[in-house]
Structure formats: structure tokens, C-alpha cells
Length: 335
Length: 261
Image (cartoon, rainbow over all chains, first blue to last red; front, side, top):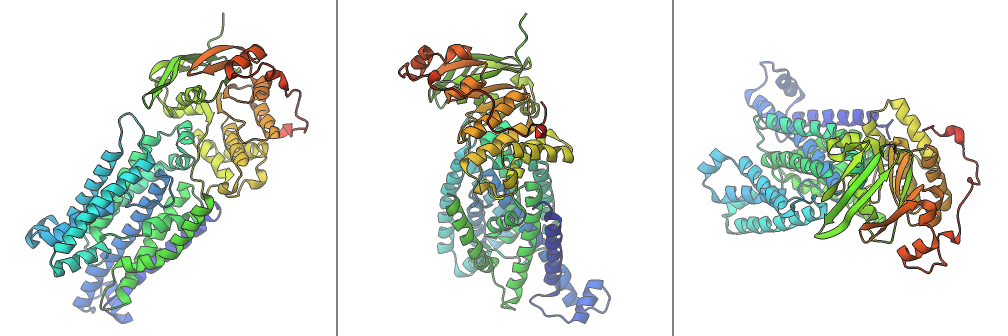
């Protein structure tokens, strides 16, 4: 597995480059090859409208999708390690429901002028943060280490609470606002702006750097808390660090693209099958694969029903079901 | 003048979950000595060991390693000096025995060649060379225990803390692996349920009952019929002398492959 890793990473990087390029070249508007060349080289012959589509819509969107795919996969891999649970995903601590309730509430209830100033992304980020704080608050007991199972169950309780709030907002909202809220709930790359890209990039870089520094401790955590403690790892602190990293990564992702499901659950599994569970190899491969898969899914969402766009959730759920079932069978066999 | 002990536990008490698990336990190990911690289930043996690898915090008392208080050590230095074989289950998907040993070696910051050599030697000692690159999830309980034992032997700390090291192991590997600890001349603190094994390896034995050390002394004295029957509440006829494991292993060991202390 060790020897294979550089080849795997190289191939995945190539695939990522290819789908990113495809994401820029293809989309709802069809261009000729001559136009594409003219736009990308920035020569004056390119029609301004088409140039705008590529430079202001497609390129930031493709970059954002790659960063979000990488971030959610990283967060998923870290959560699976922190909770030592192969079914863990980045949204486990109530993050998606908190973000949803806040965003849907903002879309449906707040006057458009307020939403424009505060922004749905900020509201979603705050909602995710609030849900996380509540989950953690429920799980922490003085003088005792965080129990992963208690964290999961607290997350479930907080999720239920926010889900009922979201359902209420959707039920009482007017149909037009509800439709826009539903689009957000199913995840979409539409409407991504340049200004969102650096924010995603900084969040991802910081979290990835911290994770690589702690790769050895993360490996040890897989063996069980007692064994990790015996190897000198402060598992309580490491787990807290992972949770904070996950909130940053996931909060940024939902604030830009809504609830993008399944990537954080499935991609780390694919990477683990390909390169094993040592984090030094698992994390980079997860990130590159996640970036490539989400970029590809987003491209399909744009072109399958063009000029209509599909929400990401529709395609991702379709692709995620078979691997999910195989994981489940694996877990049952191991149990 | 007696030497300063390499590991010293003084008046240790542990409270957890509102209960006193261990109260006023004092133990010490001289360098190179193997101290057995025996006693019935629930006596607090494992809890004492857990304080040694930071899994539980003592509510009173002090622990010194090489004369320095536990809280004056960094976690990293402490765990390099005192290594533990402990109970517990993990998420082993995607890990091989080689990985498991490697995870233990990583904090030592060894050169790649050295790390590889130590891994191979330890896995061969534990009889896992052929399974070195198999999925750890497919190992049996005994094989997994050997794998974690191999991790500890590869790390080779100055002090070995072994929590029921013979768990899941067949007689052959009980002897191979514990013989190796003894051969290296390391200090060890071991919890055991197997009296013949205790007799074979321990220099001294401390008997624990209901959270305290009820008596301690030379292994031969502690394994007498009278002590055993009082500690374990069994008929004196059924005691440590029922049988014993003595002499060298029947199968010659590939001694040249073993690393010297």
C-alpha cells in the first residue's frame, strides 16, 4: 500500500486537474473551441458576455467545489478517526441541521434587505457553530474525557431539534422562498463568487496543515483511546481539536454551497480502501479524491438538464448509495 | 544503601465515577526487576496501571519514574521511557500488523532503516512475519495481542507495563514474548491471573484486594498455598504449586535475530 501511494496520488491529481478543466470548458452555455481558447487566453476577440460566464461564474465555482470537496472529505476522515466509527460524517454533530435552520429561517423570514447585508452564508455558518456548541455542551462532563458515543447521541438530539425548526420554517414559508430554501438544502454550486474562494482556501489549508502535523497521533487514536494514551497522545485534546477543525471546514462549506451530503462519508472510505488508514497517506488522497468527485458531480448537475440545474444532493445520493451499502455490509461482517 | 527505584508509586489513590477504585497503594520497582501485580477481579490492578500511562488521573499520591515526578515529565518523554501493553479495541480497517508496530515507533523518531529493522524483528518474534501486510481486522484475538506485544517490543522502553499480557495467547507465545522481556533485562510491572506464569517471571509479587495492596514480597513467598487460598478464596490444595512451567522453551529460538537489550 505504501509503494502504491505516490502513483495513486499522482493519478488522482491528474483526474482532479482534468475535471476542473472540464468544469471550466463545459457548462450550461455551450461554447465553441475557438471561443474557449479566446476566453482562456484573454485575447480581445472573445465576446464579453461569454468571457464573463467563464471568468466570473465557472472558474470561481470550480475552485470552490474543489475546495469544498477536499474540505468535507478531510472533515469526514477526521471525524471517522475521532469517533472511531466508519459511519461518522462531518455533519454528525448537528452541524448541517443547525446551518439549515439558520439559513432557511433567513431565506424565508428575514426581509431581503437584511439577508443581503448579513448574508445567508454567514447565517448558516453561525447556525452550524451554534449547533456544535450545543452538542459539545451536552457532551462535556467536568473532569471526564469526551465520550465519543455521548457526542454522537448529543448530535442526534440537537439535529432533531433544529430539523423540526427547519420543517416549521418550510411549512409556513411562502412557496417561492421555500423553493429557494430547498435548493440550498440539497446543496448547489450555483452563485459561487470569487470572494468566497480565498476564505475556503485559507480554512482548508489551516485545517490540513494541523491534521498533517498530528498525523501520527491520529494513527494512534485508531488503535483505541487507552492504547493511544499509552503512546503519549492526549486523546481528549486531540478529539477537541478535530471537532473544531470539522466545524471550520464544514461551516465554510455549508455557508457557500448549502448541505453537500455523502462526500464526507464515502470519500474517506474509498481512500482507505486504496491506500490504507495511515493518515499521512489517507488524508491527502481523501482530499484530492473529494475535490475531484465533487467537481465532477457539480459539472454533471450543470449539463445533464441544461439549461436547468440539478441540486448536488440528487446526484450525490445516487452515487453514494452503492458504496454506502457495501460499507454497511463490511461493518456488519466485522461486528 | 539501596538503589533508588526506577519506578515508584507512593500512597496512590484513584477515585472514578464516585467510587474509590484504588486506595493508598505503594509499589516500587528496582531497575531490571519484574514485579507482578496479582489479585482477584476488580481488585484495582488495572486501575493502578492506567495511572501509569495517563488514562486515569490519581486523586492522591505520587508517581516517580527515574526519580522524577510524573507531572514533571512531558507526555512524549514519559511514554518513550515507560511503555504499556493495554486492553482496548480500535478501528483497525485499513491497518496491517506492520502499520500497528510502525504507529508505535513513530514517536521515537527513528531513521527509516532502523524503524524497518525493529518492525521486522518484533513481528518475527511474535510469529507474524507472514501476516505483516494482512488486514489487521482479519487477525484472531491472540494474533492481535501478539501484534500489540510486538509493538511494545519494537519500542523497547526502559519500563514495561503489561496489563494481562497473556490474554488470548497460547502457552507458546506466552513464554516466547515474556522470555524476551526478561532476556532484555528490562524493568516490568505486570498484572497476571496465571499463577505458574507469575512464578516463572516475577521477582516480587504484590497482592491486591479491594483496591489496596494486602501483602507483597518475594514471588516464592507470595505463591505459597496459604497466601493464595486467602487472597483468591480457594482451597489451599489448589494453589500455585499445582504445576509450574520451568526450564527453557522446547523449541529453540532464533536468538541471533533478537536485538540485544
